Image (cartoon, rainbow, N blue to C red; front, side, top):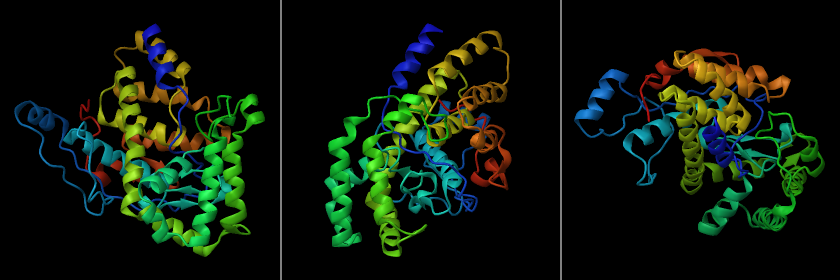
Length: 343
């Protein structure tokens, strides 16, 4: 238990959150993404022992990964798993793939990209700053001169003020905030949200030019590459969680990846209590273990979001379920075997 707690605390040191945002206005987000088919567990296990992995195959109509340079540290199986995770979690997050965009209904200013990085959580500003630093010509080509000047001024102000918030907050906008977090309330991030309210909207609706520029930006190859780089952090975090909970199956990885996307991760106490459960339930099925972990994580979720989080995670664990009002059969849709012993 001490080992689990130590690893959990190290893992959950506060870091930029790359993806969150309530799902209330994403009911139309079920545009089916294709994904990476994975052979049945037994056949794949045999293949891994006898020959190097073959090139990934894709179901029809998947997210476009063309031109992506994958880190050398990722095996072919890692790429398959990550592509699959992006397709599944991305299908829950929005219907436009890499170019997802969501307004300020949730108080986050604007959410952009496959996994909905946003201003309110401070997850979008670093990506925009990195794009400007590494590929300024992309911003200049897609955003008008006046809009670019305004955007860069907001990012500069955020960079100068980002150290203001010292208090730890919840892992996700879905979770109940602490009193101290409410008092400090991420001053730098809230300044960015105020900028979005003042510039990106006409009343309750997007200003059309701003929206078209942001959508084009999100879909650009340069920004897609940044989205994948951000997703690699969630991938690595999911693999650490997978080792800690001792359920090494593809569905475990997919569920934990989605926990990172939607909920910001697990709390240390979740892992400690799960470890206690595991000590007396070694014979529990993989699905039972994952559902126990889900129950522990749901304790922190605001009441109005519990059912959304639950349905999304159960669909991944069980393979089938209703999410956002639509029946999903994920293994059939994305051509994978959830019992594959990944990692």
